[in-house]
Image (tube, rainbow, N blue to C red):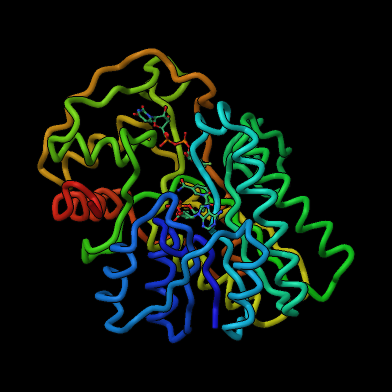
Length: 336
Ligand code: NAD
Ligand code: UFG
């Protein structure tokens, strides 16, 4: 059985759908601090069978030991964490506690249960402002915010753990910008409050929940002046987890650090135009000042994941926009 911490969240649900379709048994573990039980019910509707889900907190030794006692776990995919960059600046202790301390409690429980395979949700923000794009995994690591520092600390903890316990198999996955939804429209991204991220903001404008998009910066040194990112379809990302899990289950007893991105950069205005085309909805927007802390442009070098995992992102920007819109159109208030 595969344990997905944070499995009721956006990427966790999509990964669970892909893993179950591929024949894996999974157990989800989540404290529902940023997700809802309805998401798990929707996952069950997609896969056509019950999916075990345990409510608990990765920071609780009791919860974690109970979980490993009750289930025979062969590997862990560790999604549980807080991810809002702005909030991480105002609540740093909460972020270090939840992300870093929570990971330590999980790893200690894995040690006790003799489970030695883990796939970890890192982030492209461990790179901070890169010297150039595409960014290879060997690029300098200089995260520019607290959230990114929690991810780098966890990577360091896992590298040190492997130094002391070389029989562990550890995949560190640096995601670029996940967007889109399962094609059936039953699950998707459902942020609390006003979205911080571009795609959910765009879909909420399209569905009439928000009046207009603010494009943060029109004077970047990019082809159209707006910021450029490597958007990746969440179903491609989920398949990247499947490939990483399969790698870990082969027991390579190594640390593998890979980017999960497409290798392509698109601007904010490229995404708005693609969304308008895919949805038939006009997205009113206004170009405003740059957002503090934003990097002008970056995208990942996706070649190592292809070489090591045989995985490559297949879905286009149009697919991402179509599926994000399909989800939002069918669920204008998300999982509410
Ligand atoms: P999400 O918030 O939808 O999912 C995370 C889940 O973890 C939520 O369901 C939340 O309730 C749960 N959780 C948080 N703290 C917990 C705790 N202490 N104990 C138990 N459960 C807890 O986020 P997501 O987009 O699915 O992201 C999953 C992971 O990927 C996170 O670690 C995130 O930092 C990382 N990541 C996300 C992105 C992105 O843009 N979405 C990019 C890079 C990395
Ligand atoms: N943007 C807007 N208007 C908005 C929201 C975003 O113009 O309302 C722009 C941003 O300025 C940026 C682009 O859209 O140019 C993407 O911004 P997001 O907030 O969607 O994503 P970020 O690239 O800032 O960061 C995201 C996640 C991080 C993760 C990182 C990995 O929020 O958690 O991708 O690359 F680490």
